[in-house]
Every structure is written in structure tokens, then in C-alpha cells.
Image (cartoon, rainbow, N blue to C red):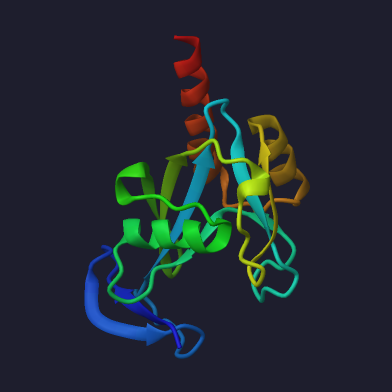
Length: 173
């Protein structure tokens, strides 16, 4: 049984928890979700395909991530999810917060991490991740446009694409 902290509309803990998949989250209540975007020194993005057995978005390419468990900080949840799903072990200092986005009943904290891990070195969580691959910005844009990659929205992807552009600009300097 997984417990989530219930947050206010401002993202502050209420002191209450909810059971994942149990009681429905009420209006003006939120929980915390983390997304992690691994980027390499060449400006490529590591993405993952969800298994076909997942209840939500089965067989779809999506961001690495998941819900923070009760008592867990956002950065700790990001490090845990990255380790669980892809086998990439990082410290809190390796992760950089990009932005918090408020959704209907959740806050999504977007994180980025620099890594040059090779796909064969990954240890995929078989129950969550079917495969992973490095893609460039144009490929990701095409995957989003075609529906092959989950569409988190224009504002969201503008942030992701901006991260890639920043790495490319660093290489040119």
C-alpha cells in the first residue's frame, strides 16, 4: 500500500495522507508527482516506454517519474524514481529543479540530470519500463506530434526543449 501526502492548492502539506488508488482526491487537494529528464553532453534526451501492463498510458513513451510517497521530498522522489525505473543512481546534488507545474489534482516537479549512461548499462524496472532510448530534440518533437510520446502540453515541452537548447549552446561556447 502506497501513501501520498495530500497538498494544498499552494503545494503545502495538509498533514493528511491518501492511499494510492484508494480514496479519490478531493477538489482543491493535490499530490506530488516528479518527472526526471536525463540529458547527455550531446543534447540528447533519455526517454522510456511504459509497459503494456501499466493502467495509465500503457505502451506509451513518457517521462521517467512517478508519485512522491508520504514524507518524501521532491528531490528524494526524483532520485528514487530514476534509480527504480532506469537503474541510474544519483545524489540530490546531481538533480536540478526545472519548474513546478500545477495540474488538476497534482503538482509536477520537473527535474533534469546530466548523464552519459549508455542504454545497455540501464537496469530497467520490468514492471514499469519496456525500453529506453536516447533521442534528439527533433525526434522527441515528432514523437509528441504523432502521439507516440505522451503530450504533457506546450508549456511543458517548451521547458524540455529549452533544456536541450541550453546544452547545445554550452557546447558552442
